[in-house]
Image 1 (cartoon, rainbow, N blue to C red):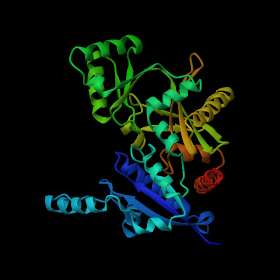
Image 2: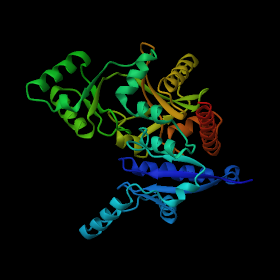
Image 3: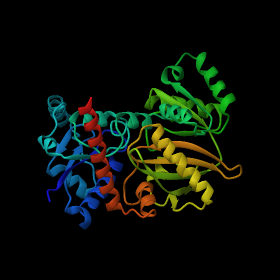
Image 4: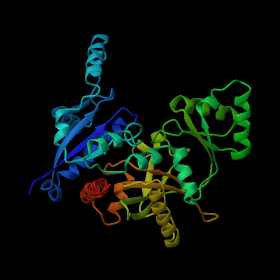
Length: 370
């Protein structure tokens, strides 16, 4: 049987470069297990932090070491690389033409926001995960919340802002902060709209903290969202599929830190994952139904992790966000939820590739008909 050549695309220019490498290493191991090695051949592609695509031995070395490729540090080396980068900015490695199906594992901006998905769509080759629309809506917290509201999914109160409002004149900005304080109260959370993994997020409890957090968030993104704080348990559900997606069992995240920030998320033993979550069957079913609604609302495909707030005292469930390209290491919530639902890591990777082929085939058929 001829093996499918899987273009494993990882690294990238976002702040989640290292997380991407970890996810790609886990997927590479899954593709070389006994049940998958006869089906797939891995072609690794590594995107450096400066945006340059590499193929061949270097990506393989990064996968084996788990360490990012270090960029030049001296001015002469930087100048030489910069000239090369300008010349090769729009050139992909020749091995790109050999790929049968892409498995992008690029977290954050320029990886899960629809940009790389647009490029892969133009290549007319199948790829794992959501397309341009699902990725873009899933990444932008403001667009995401608009889609959730249209679908009738309950959410905490929030206010959408832009950088121009935050960096406005001294007369306007204080009024904006007063409005946020009056409508959302404290504590509240300030977030850049288009960054993942809790980057740039702050929990604020006073006007002074609010002003500082808004200024900081505006330095990361021109779109900003402020959400009301809520005392709740944090539950997560994984979704797998295309037009008829399935939901996993529900898991819970617990931690001792003030909130689930970047350090808590990626530092060992800072957070605990409880799978399955100790909740009633009724709450589990409701979470699963809402996860599927969210998946469809943003037009996701392949995979997604949907996060919720569960206010146990009142029984209220609020959808927090959807992540269309969640962390994919062996200890990440998404694969663990499926493992506890009866789908092993190697089987999960195989299913995602098959879903990519299925979706591409359906899309190609539609294009021919039109």
